[in-house]
Image (cartoon, rainbow, N blue to C red):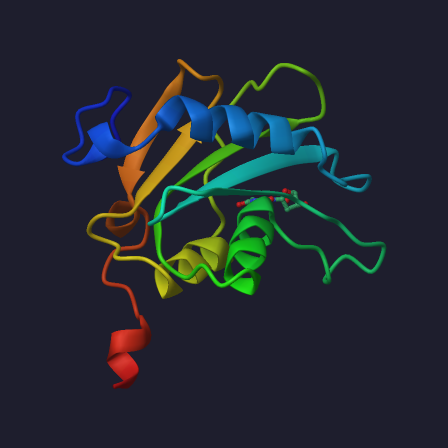
Length: 150
Ligand code: THU
């Protein structure tokens, strides 16, 4: 299960506060006129660089993209393919983030492509001090990944 404190092995090396702050800041850029659900994400590369993203909706609905995949797409398109952690902050429109926003199934699978599910951290945050930490393997158990194809 996830934990509300920094007790997951390996979490000490993750700049949690920076990552959450980046996600909360990115959420302000969300383009979500249809759902009014604003999401920000910040992914940490193995080189400790942070890439942010927000959800971007579309009038035709299906072209909409989640914040997590925006962040991953930005990083991968800049040549970064290895990630240590992601922070996600999502909540209905408004300044207060009232709930923990968990990555959707599609985003979990996209994260799986570029991470080790046994050591990749998913941080869902309401604020810099109110958050939960999971390993990807907890959110996507028995997953299918690139290794299966080789
Ligand atoms: N959304 C995300 O950005 N990330 C998720 O993991 C869950 C859902 C977005 C998609 C859509 O713009 C809005 O939240 C409502 O589903």
